[in-house]
Amino acid sequence: AQSVTQLGSHVSVSEGALVLLRCNYSSSVPPYLFWYVQYPNQGLQLLLKYTSAATLVKGINGFEAEFKKSETSFHLTKPSAHMSDAAEYFCAVSYGGNEKLTFGTGTRLTIIP
Amino acid sequence: DTAVSQTPKYLVTQMGNDKSIKCEQNLGHDTMYWYKQDSKKFLKIMFSYNNKELIINETVPNRFSPKSPDKAHLNLHINSLELGDSAVYFCASSLATYEQYFGPGTRLTVT
Image 1: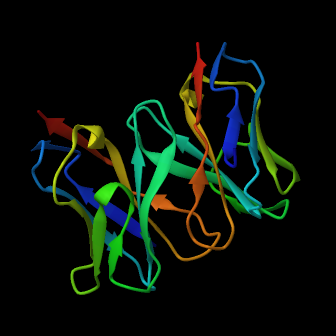
Image 2: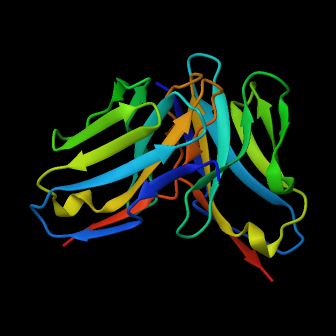
């Protein structure tokens, strides 16, 4: 069965510092991987997706993620944190188009001024 | 605006009542979903419909019944509401392009 594990339920970084949110997947077939962001009292917004094309994926708001099959990882990074990045981030996996998303438990990102 | 919309945004009701949440998408997608987010922010699929046909039905109590009158709408009806049903319910849609687009959520509070 497919699953994702997000290490660290809470991550705090200083404004301007590197953001690194970790996600490891478990899948018996090539996965499709996603990062979503949820701002307080809002829905989920897609940040980026990996669907077996380029392993380095660039998303919105300066975020990017690298698919590493050898490490079964899909970590999310941003070179310089901004106050507006404070939110809950979810990693998710699916088998393909129109399949259900299986979510990780989320990581709350706090930005320290 | 093109989007996934849900009504109502907030729903407060008493145990035992029956309530419905409506979802509409105008993105031209053919698959729609319901997810439940619990108090710890954990998200889990409940149902999905493709072209009005039920394709995913996770282990959800029979009190929950989805209905899809057409490809653009997926409603969720809940009978005999219980305290444990309190959560945020998200509707989403997709078009075989892997990514799903989510609505703003409906916060259900059962008292």
